[in-house]
Image (tube, rainbow over all chains, first blue to last red):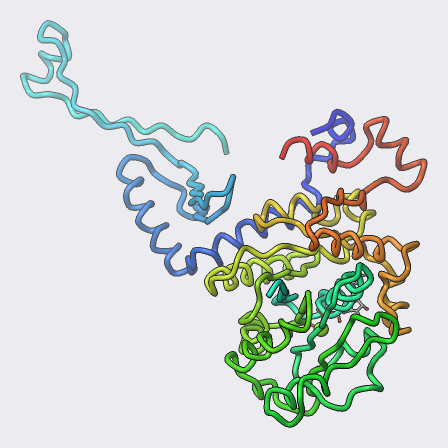
Length: 117
Length: 275
Ligand SMILES: Nc1ncnc2c1ncn2[C@@H]1O[C@H](COP(=O)(O)OP(=O)(O)OP(=O)(O)O)[C@@H](O)[C@H]1O
Ligand SMILES: [Mg+2]
């Protein structure tokens, strides 16, 4: 982006640029014959896999085909709601936690909220 | 033997196939080639009018294919170019009056007589389009720099390739430099990047084209017009000559040039560098 463009604050893409981007997506669909139903399935599969590790904001998930640098790509945009961190904790035997637990490891689950929004 | 059959097609209608056929054909004839332009848009005859030959039609393509007349009887000699001939489309026939085998045979019949046979394809991707490309050595796609046209062009490129034809070249028609400069229209580079084909020519939007069509005189005769020069250059590229691409996007007004110099110019130049 040129300095002046920045100064006048034009961050919005021009209609020409919008057309080009929309075309890229449309053509990628057309070319590899990915119909919306197939994309829905892929989206579902991705969500299922990723949700085991992270909580995804399902309302705002976008899965699309695009063409960049001569290659067709799948672009998945999946906003993370919460990150699930779960692990087994085996505290050192001398620590107070260990005596409180009386042996067996501790199951820890931490939920981290998204810090934006 | 050495003849080349070139089909002008587009997918989308009204983007300039007939205008392009008439102008490339005329330009090649001006350069001393023997040329036949063939209107394969059966039922929607147009090429005759763009060339100003609409009052001379006796027989047409379907008559030839059905053996109602000999090829020579149907070919109409151009008004100004002694080596340019038109094979008109039938006007009152169904668009499925001809099949692919017949079209291929027609091309074979024309080849010994001409250096270049240029076929004006109908819009669409149905039988008429397939007939138009079946006998072609080369395909030229006409597109306008807007979404629907480029998208259809992409579809055609796929169909041309799956028909076993070499990769088509592109004529980008109706480019509006002012709009490109403002960022309101896709640039030549944008379209080429998206389609991934070679460029044969850029024809600017030019109201002189409409005037020329009204007069029945192809615009290539008028070298003072940008579109006329652009078509002439494209025809030279068909002959294999290296003609630099005309700067259609060049700034015209002093104000515009100044603004560019100062960096107020639109993203055009920068985008070029980046890509
Ligand atoms: N570069 C141009 N500048 C201005 N007008 C143009 C230009 N090219 C084409 N036109 C206009 O567009 C009209 C349609 O062009 P043309 O008949 O060549 O398209 P076509 O692709 O053959 O259409 P169809 O699909 O109906 O056969 C022309 O009559 C003319 O008015
Ligand atoms: Mg036409």
